[in-house]
Image (cartoon, rainbow, N blue to C red; front, top):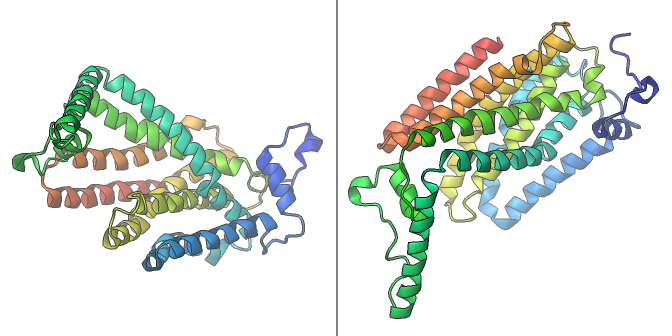
Length: 343
């Protein structure tokens, strides 16, 4: 009967580790309560918050930026109308998977793909970079011997190039970067192939790993759980970007990053997660015969376009104000298009 939990072992099918964890965690829990696994994740989040504050007390002001976005989305998208249909424990588990194991898996896949695409797209410039870096190393050694600055021979951004983001990157790396076709292909692959495909695939796979999703009687379970997974991933991503400066970024910069991403990144991941969830609903609830690629394509297109336009603006537009305005405009347009498609 639809909606009745099925013991996969009795069906002769191997249970996934997520099913086993879910079955173990649900022992003693009810529809409206959390299992010990979910409580453990909540305790982990509390410990992480204490760690952030202990490292720098003023960063306590960043915590609402990390928490409010997911809370608002889940309150209006799940808690108000669907909490009686979908167990909160299942929602927390999907959020938790996106937050920690899912983000780690995505990071590994993205690192491998980025390296492969980098080698493929910059093979024409790589030999020149090696010779430039070797030259800088030799100049550094000579500078140490004569008492001059080791970095005196590196490439410096002139006043005329100070607004060119690529020139600033060249100055920091000490290499000459040319905007070849491979450069633009790399940006395209980075947006659509690395970020778009890998992150949306994680949102696709996560609900399917839980038996509670596959056997839920609620027609909204895939939509809610993919969005929950997307919010978990976006949350840990926001924390990572906020503190990516390693203490070099000032408090105001961390505030801007945390609260701007609380709006933009949360919206983007929620919309893309919702698109994936609708695809899973069409296949597993409505019975439509659609493939993995048909489910993922709209989400990858939305996610990839969102990232691609930002990367193009960041590397091509010289004026900082124009770049910022352009990012706001294109991000809004892409998110509105994705939202209209989702609706």
